[in-house]
Length: 127
Image (cartoon, rainbow, N blue to C red; front, side, top):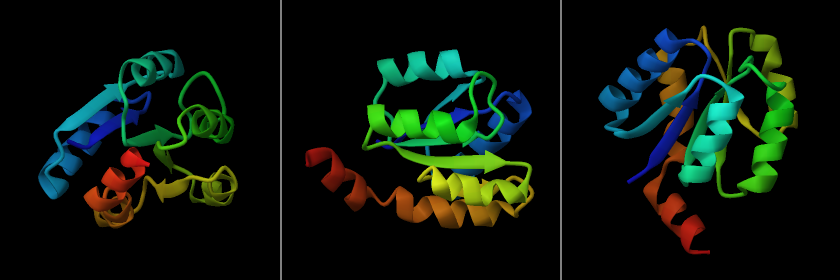
Protein backbone atom coordinates (compact mmCIF):
# COMPACT_ATOMS: atom_id res chain seq x y z
CA UNK A 1 0.00 0.00 0.00
CA UNK A 2 1.20 3.49 -0.84
CA UNK A 3 1.59 5.70 2.23
CA UNK A 4 1.11 9.47 2.01
CA UNK A 5 1.58 12.26 4.55
CA UNK A 6 -0.22 15.56 4.06
CA UNK A 7 1.52 18.30 6.07
CA UNK A 8 -0.53 21.49 6.02
CA UNK A 9 -1.49 23.85 8.86
CA UNK A 10 -5.03 24.22 7.50
CA UNK A 11 -7.28 21.28 8.43
CA UNK A 12 -9.78 22.11 5.65
CA UNK A 13 -7.00 21.88 3.06
CA UNK A 14 -5.83 18.56 4.50
CA UNK A 15 -9.37 17.16 4.39
CA UNK A 16 -9.87 18.38 0.80
CA UNK A 17 -6.60 16.77 -0.31
CA UNK A 18 -7.52 13.49 1.40
CA UNK A 19 -10.91 13.48 -0.30
CA UNK A 20 -9.30 14.24 -3.68
CA UNK A 21 -6.71 11.48 -3.31
CA UNK A 22 -9.29 8.95 -2.16
CA UNK A 23 -11.82 9.71 -4.89
CA UNK A 24 -9.54 10.36 -7.86
CA UNK A 25 -6.69 7.95 -7.10
CA UNK A 26 -8.14 5.37 -4.71
CA UNK A 27 -5.55 6.19 -2.03
CA UNK A 28 -6.23 5.11 1.54
CA UNK A 29 -2.92 5.14 3.43
CA UNK A 30 -3.06 8.88 4.15
CA UNK A 31 -1.90 10.55 7.37
CA UNK A 32 -2.38 14.24 8.05
CA UNK A 33 -0.24 16.54 10.20
CA UNK A 34 -0.50 20.25 10.96
CA UNK A 35 3.03 21.24 12.02
CA UNK A 36 6.70 20.38 11.55
CA UNK A 37 7.09 18.69 14.97
CA UNK A 38 4.25 16.28 14.26
CA UNK A 39 5.61 15.72 10.77
CA UNK A 40 9.02 14.68 12.12
CA UNK A 41 7.43 12.31 14.67
CA UNK A 42 5.20 10.82 11.98
CA UNK A 43 8.12 10.31 9.60
CA UNK A 44 10.04 8.53 12.35
CA UNK A 45 7.10 6.19 13.03
CA UNK A 46 6.15 5.49 9.42
CA UNK A 47 7.87 4.96 6.12
CA UNK A 48 5.80 7.08 3.72
CA UNK A 49 6.20 7.08 -0.04
CA UNK A 50 5.05 10.65 -0.58
CA UNK A 51 4.90 13.88 1.38
CA UNK A 52 2.59 16.73 0.35
CA UNK A 53 4.22 19.62 2.20
CA UNK A 54 2.62 23.05 2.53
CA UNK A 55 5.02 25.87 1.74
CA UNK A 56 4.14 27.73 4.91
CA UNK A 57 4.01 24.86 7.37
CA UNK A 58 4.84 26.32 10.76
CA UNK A 59 8.34 25.71 12.01
CA UNK A 60 10.72 25.97 9.07
CA UNK A 61 10.94 27.39 5.52
CA UNK A 62 9.69 24.77 3.04
CA UNK A 63 12.83 24.56 0.85
CA UNK A 64 15.00 24.05 3.95
CA UNK A 65 12.64 21.43 5.36
CA UNK A 66 12.57 19.73 1.98
CA UNK A 67 16.36 19.51 1.73
CA UNK A 68 16.68 18.17 5.28
CA UNK A 69 14.01 15.55 4.69
CA UNK A 70 15.62 14.44 1.43
CA UNK A 71 18.88 13.82 3.27
CA UNK A 72 17.17 11.90 6.07
CA UNK A 73 14.71 10.03 3.81
CA UNK A 74 16.25 9.72 0.33
CA UNK A 75 13.39 7.50 -0.97
CA UNK A 76 10.70 10.00 0.07
CA UNK A 77 9.03 11.84 -2.80
CA UNK A 78 8.09 15.41 -1.86
CA UNK A 79 5.59 17.77 -3.47
CA UNK A 80 5.54 21.34 -2.15
CA UNK A 81 2.16 23.09 -2.18
CA UNK A 82 1.81 26.87 -2.12
CA UNK A 83 -0.78 29.60 -2.52
CA UNK A 84 1.88 31.62 -4.36
CA UNK A 85 2.68 30.40 -7.88
CA UNK A 86 5.99 32.32 -7.69
CA UNK A 87 7.33 29.75 -5.19
CA UNK A 88 7.78 27.18 -7.97
CA UNK A 89 11.38 28.16 -8.79
CA UNK A 90 12.48 27.79 -5.16
CA UNK A 91 10.71 24.43 -4.94
CA UNK A 92 12.57 23.16 -8.00
CA UNK A 93 15.80 24.45 -6.43
CA UNK A 94 15.02 22.36 -3.37
CA UNK A 95 14.58 19.28 -5.54
CA UNK A 96 10.83 18.92 -5.04
CA UNK A 97 7.85 18.91 -7.32
CA UNK A 98 5.52 21.87 -6.96
CA UNK A 99 1.78 22.46 -7.14
CA UNK A 100 0.14 25.85 -6.96
CA UNK A 101 -2.87 25.55 -4.64
CA UNK A 102 -4.97 27.65 -7.02
CA UNK A 103 -4.49 25.15 -9.85
CA UNK A 104 -7.30 22.78 -10.80
CA UNK A 105 -7.29 19.47 -8.86
CA UNK A 106 -6.35 17.60 -12.03
CA UNK A 107 -2.98 19.39 -11.99
CA UNK A 108 -2.12 17.77 -8.65
CA UNK A 109 -3.33 14.39 -9.90
CA UNK A 110 -1.21 14.68 -13.06
CA UNK A 111 1.89 15.33 -10.95
CA UNK A 112 1.16 12.59 -8.43
CA UNK A 113 0.36 9.77 -10.88
CA UNK A 114 3.92 9.30 -12.14
CA UNK A 115 5.34 9.81 -8.64
CA UNK A 116 3.09 7.09 -7.26
CA UNK A 117 3.63 4.58 -10.04
CA UNK A 118 3.68 1.32 -8.08
CA UNK A 119 6.45 -0.17 -10.22
CA UNK A 120 8.69 2.84 -9.46
CA UNK A 121 7.91 2.62 -5.75
CA UNK A 122 8.53 -1.12 -5.57
CA UNK A 123 11.83 -0.90 -7.42
CA UNK A 124 13.05 1.99 -5.26
CA UNK A 125 12.19 0.18 -2.02
CA UNK A 126 13.96 -3.00 -3.06
CA UNK A 127 17.14 -1.15 -4.07
